Every structure is written in C-alpha cells, then in structure tokens.
Amino acid sequence: DTGVSQNPRHKITKRGQNVTFRCDPISEHNRLYWYRQTLGQGPEFLTYFQNEAQLEKSRLLSDRFSAERPKGSFSTLEIQRTEQGDSAMYLCASSLSGPATQYFGPGTRLLVL
Amino acid sequence: AQSVTQLDSHVSVSEGTPVLLRCNYSSSYSPSLFWYVQHPNKGLQLLLKYTSAATLVKGINGFEAEFKKSETSFHLTKPSAHMSDAAEYFCVVSGLEAAGNKLTFGGGTRVLVKP
Image (tube, rainbow over all chains, first blue to last red; front, side):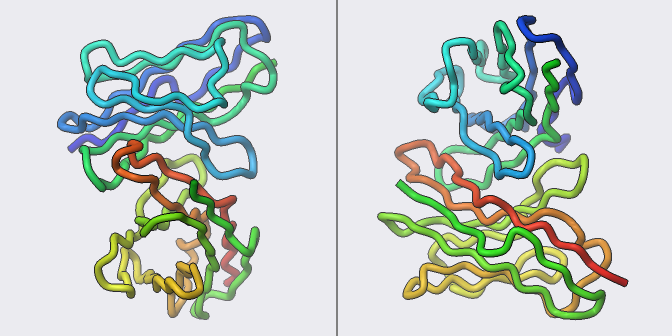
C-alpha cells in the first residue's frame, strides 16, 4: 500500500497563470476527494468523485476550478487565472464506498504571487 | 448539515502530563466522528474514529475519545503527553453516505508539548 500521493508538493505561480495538480489515490479506492486548507483553518470540502463521475462540487469551487478523474484512477485539479486568494494547501483523499475512512495525501501547497 | 467546534485553538502541556482536546459537533443524524492529526509538512493521519459502536474509542499512539450524545461532544484525551505529540489536531464529522461522506473539519487545535 503506497498511500495517496500528490504532485507537485509545492507550486509557486504568478497571478493569472494556470496551474494543475495531480492526485493518485490508493489503487482499490473508488472515491476521491479534494479539500482546500488555508492557513490556520481546517480543510474544507471542494469536490468528490465516485469512480470517474464527479458527484458534487462545493460552492467554494468557482468556475475557474475544474477537476477530472478520466479513468476512475488518478485525478487532476486545475485552477485557471489564479488569484492570490487561491493560495492554500490542496489536499486529496481517497476511500472505498460506504462509511469508509478517508486517507489523505501530503497535499500540494500553492502560493500565488 | 453538520458542523464541528473545537473549543481551544491552542493547548500547551508538559511532557508526561495528560492531554485534553475538546470538540463539540452538530448533526441532524447519527454521525461518524474522527480525529485526525497533522504534523508539520505531513499529511493528515487518522487517530481514531467513532461509527456508532462503543462510545469509548481507542486510537493510535495512546489516544482515546469518548462519544457523548447527550453533550454532543467527542473529546480527545491521552494520559501522558510525549514530545512527538506536538502537532495540529482536527475533529471531523462525516456527512451521510448518500451524500458522499463529505468530511467537515473543526478549526483545529495546535498542541505544544513542553519538556
């Protein structure tokens, strides 16, 4: 079990640029979640997938954000036209269906200058 | 909808003394509750979870938590703090399975352990 992995671990970008993050879940997990954690706060739910289907998006996820999980395995989160307010830690988690524990990756820390 | 309130943003304890981290939750159904720990530059790690079985839940590294429905509380304790316990702790409630088990986190409690 290699756990949930995320790449890159750190990203610095300039305002207005696009960025993309990748999450590789635990292999047998059919659910994948994205959360965002700003400094001094707890993580907040952004979106989740059941296999390749995106089933819910939070109101936090503006139209500049898009997430995909094309083959029901890894997922990408893209932010277009980044803003300074997008600076945060982006966390990915995966789980089985049902009342299962979510296992988190190490996160991608984004800094928008 | 559900919510979680962690009553202390910071807790400072001496090594070898007990640790108490307080958490109250609000939920319109019988929730699943979790405590996660986050060490600097590391991912969230599950300490323990409550899923309507025994109300006293034992976790890793000597932590335990007690679910009290009448008080809507899920406080985390450890009898003797270790230096390695210095980290941020999050109390978490899970949404309904039909709604994808989305997690709602408290604001976190940062634990400082003094030698």
